[in-house]
Structure formats: C-alpha cells, structure tokens
Image (cartoon, rainbow, N blue to C red):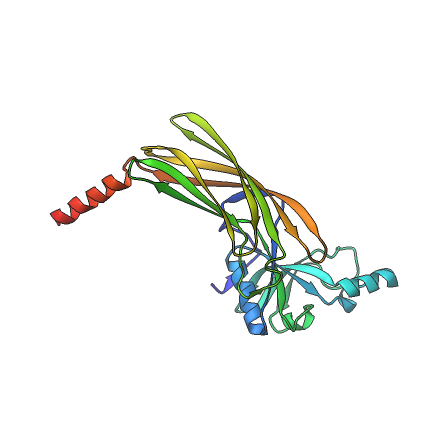
Amino acid sequence: MEKIKLFVNEKTKIKKTTGLAPVISYEPWVLRSIESCKQTLLDGHPVLIRLHSGASYPCKTDENNYKLDMESHSVMIIGFDDNEKTFDVLDPWPETAKGVNKGIWKLSYELFPIVCVNSSLSKATALCLPEIYVVKLSDSEGNCSLKLNLGFYTPKGYIIDEKQSNFKNFNIELTYKINNEIITYKNEIKGKWVVGEYAELIIPIGKNLNSNINFKFNISTFIEGKRPYPYSDKIDFEYEENIQFNNKSIQNYEEEITQKSKIV
C-alpha cells in the first residue's frame, strides 16, 4: 500500500477504549525510521512524534516559549503518501494561536529527521490499542473453549524501555448467547506483562456447539511505567467478535477427513 489518508483503524475489533498504550521505538537510520512509522500506520496505530518548536509555535510569553522549547511540541502522524513522500500530521496547536502549523498538515519525508526531536535516534511512539487475540478450541469430546491473549503491540525497530512499561492485571467480563440464554463469564488474570509478553486465559464456552456466536468482551487493565516519572493509569476497552462453532468434535472431524481421503 502506498497511501493512507486521515487515519482510521479498521483492523481492530475493539469498539471503545478509554486510553492507548504507548510503545517507544527507535531506528538508527532515518529511512528505516520512516518505514517503521509507515508500518505502524498500516498495522492500525497512529504515531506520536515530538517537534522542535522554534518559530513554528510562538507563545505569548518568554516563559512559555522557554518551556515549549525545552519540552518540545507533540503531534500525531495519522497517514502517509508515498507518491508525495509525505506524512499526514494531526496538530493540536490552537487555531487562534500564532504559528503556521495547525490542524492537519503535511510533513515531508525529507524534513522528518530535521524537525523531530531525537532525530539522531529517529525516535517515535506508537499509540496502540491493547492487542487481543481470540482462538477457538475444542477437544475430542466436543468441549468448546476460547483462548484469549492480551498484550502490547510491538512496532518495528528497537524498543525503548521495553521492561519499564507493563500491563498489570486484566479484569475480563464476557457476554454471549447460546440457545437464547445469555451467559456472562467473569475472571481476572493477575500478573505483569511487558512489551512482547501476553497474558493468557482459557474460557470454557459449551459442548457440541453448532452456531455462530457473538462474543462481547469488556476488559480493564492498568498500564504502569517508570519514565519520565512513575505512573499508573487504568484502561477500559470493549471488544466484539463473531465465531462459528460446529457440533463435530476433533475426533469426528478427523474420522470424516480420513473417510473422504479413502473415497478419493
């Protein structure tokens, strides 16, 4: 894909969230950093970068100018265009304030390493929804379950503070319907998981199921970190997925495949 305009995350089935999980990465070469940002966008996550402020973001007082110059100004990359060789940038700078960059504007690949803070490290922060993977399981007796994995998105590049940020505990509430009966399942996965690690839970669903079931997850967790200062924030998110079950056990399915192969 050569072009993403006005970032919309269509890859996730998360319906609602109260926060995003930041993962900071860097690449030692600018071209690799650009490709890493583009891949993060393709994977469905915006990218936060910090810009040198200077004349582009003038403040009313010298004190605020100094503070902005020291802390820099954050903007979000929400798209890219390889034909134009530009990123689409969402800028929170107020429309009423002085300066040239406001709203949505284009940042060229050429200027990307010049205006970014820490450009020598090509540092960028992926702002990610928690990753959730759901897999259906069944055994030889027809018992059906879901395997749930939860964790951070891992962007391309070298992860900064890989062990400094973590998810702590996942509280899970699952609601689904079988034979017109609404079933609610609740559980908590206790522990801590850093970037690259996933919490896992097996949820029993039923036996000899033969239907398409809609599963609605309500999940809450805490994200913790130590830099630039110790913090702990709660994130709530909702996830929904339809999964097709049939009433054949793995054993029956394997027997059926064997019979078909003999006929052939």
